Amino acid sequence: MKIVIANDHAAVDMKMEIMTYLQELGHEVLNIGTDTADRCNYPEYGEKAARLVVSGEADCGVLICGTGVGISIAANKVKGIRAAVCSEPTTARLVKEHNNANMIAFGARIVGPEAAKAIIDAYLNAEFQGGRHAERVALIGAIEERECGADDRAV
Ligand code: RB5
Image 1 (cartoon, helix red, strand yellow):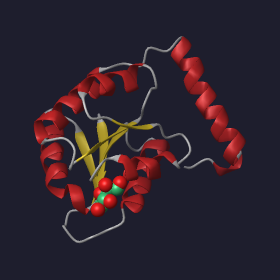
Image 2 (tube, protein in one colour; image 1 turned 90 degrees about the horizontal axis):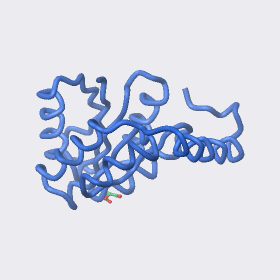
Image 3 (cartoon, protein in one colour; image 1 turned 120 degrees about the horizontal axis):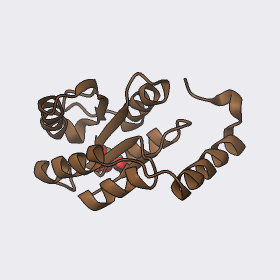
Image 4 (cartoon, rainbow, N blue to C red; image 1 turned 90 degrees about the vertical axis):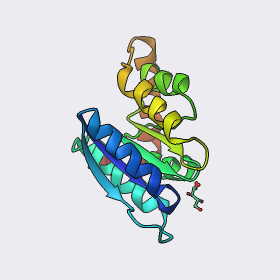
């Protein structure tokens, strides 16, 4: 898969480790950055990564900041993004199976590298179950349409 990864200054070391892990699994990784410990603004990185997912240039995305929350909130402002913060593998599996999450997020200050890898594994190995879940995901899309209108679709 082609996977975009983005992070802020709180998660550089974690990003490097996860990027290597994804590459070892055979995935192509698009690294949005940041790659330095200089303080930066997570919304910029979350948005860039989200736009690559919505455009189809990436199949899915991994977002990492201190908690995983800020960068995922930013990504979720991009139409078509369903980014989910996970701190353990069961949630990571379910956000794919039920919510068809196209980005997964976690906090470098919340989980360690091994837990992060387990979260990634659970997410990547899961499949969207469709059916009643597809109807609910469509209802999420309908909220976006009412909020933004079709003309604002991110490309
Ligand atoms: C940065 O200090 C921190 O606020 C950020 O990484 C993230 O946790 C925000 O949600």
